[in-house]
Length: 325
Length: 264
Ligand SMILES: Nc1ncnc2c1ncn2[C@@H]1O[C@H](COP(=O)(O)OP(=O)(O)OP(=O)(O)O)[C@@H](O)[C@H]1O
Ligand SMILES: [Mg+2]
Image 1 (cartoon, chains in turn blue, yellow):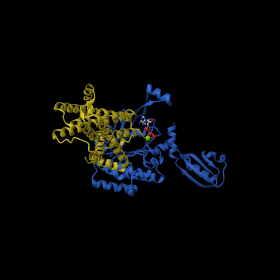
Image 2 (cartoon, chains in turn red, blue):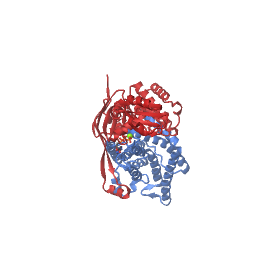
Image 3 (tube, rainbow over the protein chains, first blue to last red):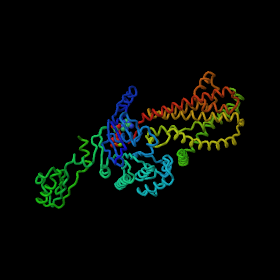
Image 4 (cartoon, rainbow over the protein chains, first blue to last red):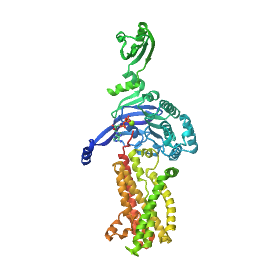
């Protein structure tokens, strides 16, 4: 039994930006004669998301990811198409819609800068009309999951970026939203904090059957969290489906990494495939999937091998290939 | 309702954090009051009556005007502009929170805080300077006086809010806001009673919303305004309030549609 939570049909969002040449002359010209250009940030995209899905939204800078999330969360008025979230039209910003969604942007904050996070939480408690007990339980649970117990009384401006992001997350989740829009939630975090954040999101998604759309430039986030990805470029969707499939489609090969016991001449191993990296006794090949076993066997029998590993190609690599097409 | 109370509380907390800013702001207000006060005081050293005002009535006017200014003028439009320009307005738009009500609450918290201080300050001033002020006790005057202040407050809030909303379209709202505050202060009657202006100019001015911010309530306080003048004033106030509220809502909705949520 599935339940469509987000449905987008032919969504368009154009920005009108005014053009100006650099320098003073440019300023004067543009003052006298304003020129506008329409930026097609989102140009006719469609997709559907079912309850409990965790979707990765990926694409290069300026692709239209943030814009899409802003439209879905009711901040921007679309220029065309139909958008429904939980059966409601986001831009109408009905209470029923607002109390069920949350938007987190890695570079924006809702916490009051000069007050401790707890004050912002209490304000949200009132805004979303959360009961006393529920509030207490949720804070307790979230701060345990995120390990932030002791910083809730420190003014936000004195927190580190990672601590602040965790508090932002708590503030955004206090009202237990059913739908979560996350725009680069791990930006600027260190490896450990990134990992924590991923684990947390995964757990949150599982526990609450929350529907989540996540954008990120860290493919680690996407790989770890999302079964399904939507790839967007220049305002258009160029792929929507499982991560696995796209890897198979664009990268029907694996990487074989070999350490030979002695330095080796590249010419001798040319027949195994294109060497992507080579340094004396270490070589990395790209090998088609169906030839992996045959070629490894041959390698092992013909050369003195110290170590060998077979890996999927880096997902960054694949995504780059797709964008470049 | 309690959400707005919580916003109120947070606003006060911020005042306490930025104590120094607040003290400087209060100093500025007192200096301004003293300045206008002493200018008029020196005028009356050599004359008994100026433009039909006695020393005691003009000084009362100035002090009443400063009370009214504290209640009517302080406003949060700069916050609004800021939040549009930086995109932090997103934080309200995403939540079940009345947008205008949010700013109204911030405004009210701001004002109550300032009024508290003002009352202490003005009491000290009156004790120290012993100006010949008129203490109004007639309830038939005090009621319309406070009513007109409420009217002025709403008018000022709307005008300011509308200017703030222009930040959805233009980048120069700050300038407009500044210009407007100078405008409102002088045309509103904060510096001198407006009826010392030439008659035609004065009558024309009375059709605009400005005199109802400071001049009209201060004049009411002095007493001696006849009923038809009073009634006229309240009718103009009511009309402006209606027009401005309507305008404010229309502009707000248009602004939301135009909004491009900068950032990220
Ligand atoms: N407020 C705005 N006004 C005008 N144009 C905008 C605005 N916001 C975004 N754009 C333009 O719209 C396009 C899409 O921007 P968007 O922010 O959605 O990209 P993105 O996919 O989130 O990129 P990134 O990965 O860099 O965050 C870009 O060309 C951008 O220049
Ligand atoms: Mg973005």
